[in-house]
Length: 278
Image (cartoon, rainbow, N blue to C red; front, side, top):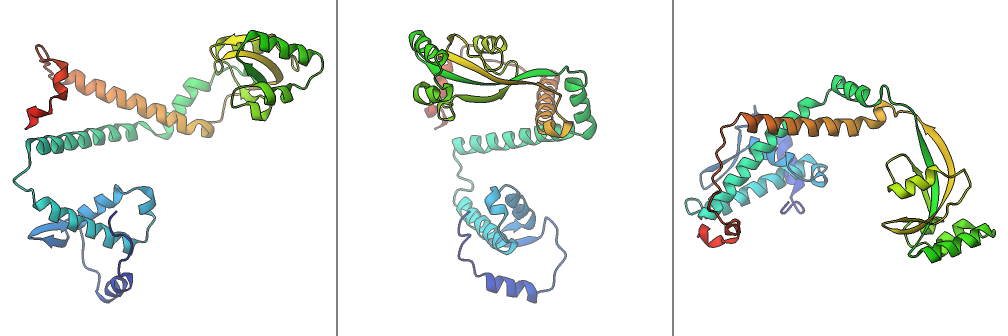
């Protein structure tokens, strides 16, 4: 935001304390620029659109900064009023359309999330879910099968798996001794998962090939994972409900709209022809 620093806050605060509060609404005029009114409602909407770091500023600073910005924008806009190019007019209409569409989708998304809807989504996914086995494993990733087999021989001879991983493995887990942490079914590529599920705790696999290279996999531990609590997945469930609601709203409105497409005879490359806007 322009000129947020350096406002005369002392004077602004003194004025605020000296003047009695007046009845205010969105149409309250806070400034005029060459006869163009700037309203309190415009200031409120602009504040809502500010990045989070500005939202935390003191109200006095925000008020002066937002008013200053709107005054500057109004003065600048007046220089082109009545003389907007066709490109400018189209850009403004695109912004208007996008804002309205976003508002419609936001309303649909907000309406989709309720305690009841969240509980129903949770029950649908987890109420009858069986406990699943999770695995804690480590690996060493190298480029060739020969390297993997040589390292396997060292491990079989008593070499420390974690030390070999730190020395030879070529992925981000190397610094942690190859530790991959806990994971469940479907979280690893299939050959890797197949190898893990066939190991006994403490056992190291033969070389396993995936698209990433050749792995030696050590199974550290297993556990049975129960369904998560509702509060633990509330965010994910809400996001899914909103996504479904948005898709449904778009499908509903486009299905019920009278739409005519006329792309025949138009070269898609014309989108690059900016001269059409001149």
